[in-house]
Image (tube, rainbow, N blue to C red; front, top):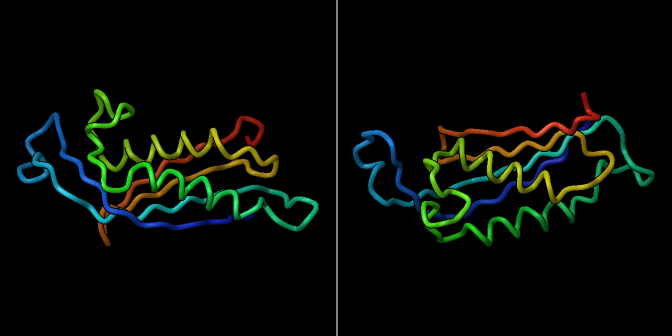
Length: 129
């Protein structure tokens, strides 16, 4: 299986809800790093899994949207605890809906909250199973 990945970083804020997390329950910033991985079993006629410029565009679009925002204030987080797991899910589903290359069968988003903590979400196309 081939993998192509693009990584970006940005600062955004959040505060955790639904549990007593002390300082984490107060609005605070994270220097997030997000990695978008696209996987597939075959290359296209040009020898690419997909055009990397396209995945850079889609990831950059999402980074611009979330940069310097408080996640709790955004509609997609309404009623959700803005954990990195939920953030990875939201980004993963959004990017999977935008990336339409026939060769792309798995889309995975990994988000680091700091150098030691990350979460990921993997979207697998039905025909990839």
